[in-house]
Image (cartoon, rainbow, N blue to C red; front, side, top):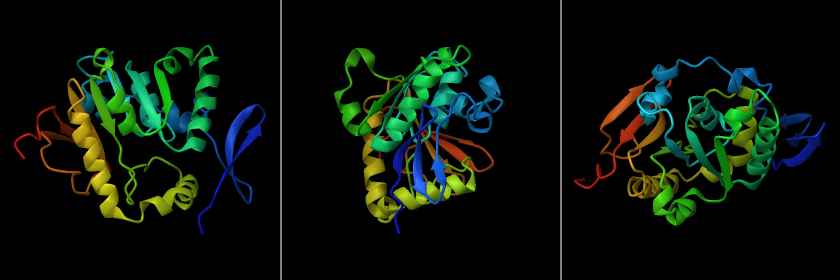
Length: 229
């Protein structure tokens, strides 16, 4: 049975209430496990995949904001991040959390580098202007074998129970994600990185390198790298 959450206001902060006393929240200020974990600077795997080890101030488009862990990490590393979230409730949750972070003296600088948009990332990319094309595009496809491995088990279960019905037809998902990859390669100035579980097949061929961690990897594509396929 699919869980349908509702927005709940708790001490001025939004959270998603799933019933049975279960809640999901985004807290860029106090959640030190998810948003303030130690970073390795230029050696951070995500930084290397997106080229931040060479140019920290890149403009990066994050096609799937989700709970914002990767976008927040990129902003901490110095990138300017534009991100899309198509699920309205998650967007409202993240928007509220970013507004709180922008009002916090210790978080305002990082939060100011995250520009969150509501809607479909493909539509946003199609409307992007030539003078503000992202340098890099980051894709984290929501496949049935989700890459959100950093989430605590309880939160993973809540998200899967809520959004899992949209993940049942893997063939449709793969077709959609290959489509956005093709679109991204026609728009990104420098590179596109796709986050995948370590042992999963690539979204498609044509990647030029893989940055591999213990449980995930990033497949690197360059604009024009699919032309010969």
